[in-house]
Image (cartoon, rainbow, N blue to C red; front, side, top):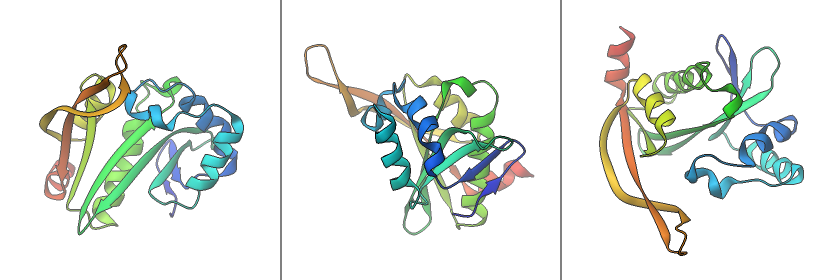
Length: 179
């Protein structure tokens, strides 16, 4: 992918230098949907960034000044013109607007360069930060899917099904927000 540069971040492909940063925020996921992405060692992280480096749907988010990895965005195209998006950021960088700045740049890229008509995201009902980010991006909540998916188990070993909100934004809504 061609790098996207904003005021404070760079969206780019993953590189080997990102292994330590990736390990930092994937070693103990705070949101259940990232439990399957948990990494335990620097070697695991290195293997993962190597795999992601050739995948344009996995986008590294790095600080512009230092090129330090602070999180990731991901997207998946559904033909012909819909994209599912998501994000995962290091908790050390929360509250600075960096996730919003990154996600806004991705939306602009999808709507202007990739021909997206519709972009949507999922957020579990206890992931308040992700819900807030969706709202700040102008996405509207389209519904709540009750007991939609299970990423973990209850204490008794049975699957723990989570309620999941669906947020979406149409290109015409995005354009109207931009004036």
